[in-house]
View 1 (cartoon, rainbow, N blue to C red):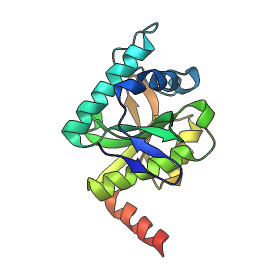
View 2: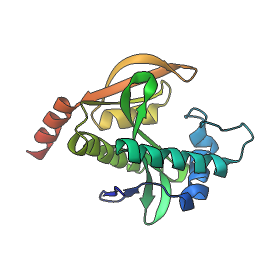
View 3: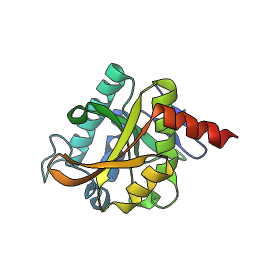
View 4: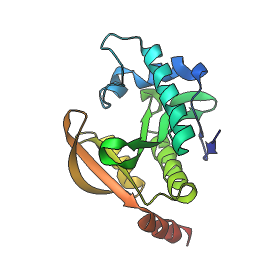
Length: 182
């Protein structure tokens, strides 16, 4: 099990026992409005069941690719998810994060996303990592900029036509890390 700790957070793969807390975060109305519907999610569906399905998909990705979204924990409490996700439509790896509204505005998304980038470039040796969000999602776009991603283009994704794409490659990431260490 790949576990990463940061200054304030613990990132670990989600377990079936996390499903109820994960559903409360992932399907909270203020979070869900920024995310596409979860695969298999009915509009009036069982959110805990959908959370179990997501956790199962994440476990498969951990086995197949050695990455997936982690659960983000603060003082033992699940506050969100963050990590890496392969998107077939783009044949690439995105860095992603979603936090419960109670955890917004404290820098946790930036902290977790930086840990995910480090894992992607330093452990997995990926060539590039991107992030996407709705154009009007200023909070996520700010995180993208803080973690060193640069706006590249607009794309269509899962029926959304107003998606912005930010990206960083391994060489640029390494240069930034080297500069920050000086």
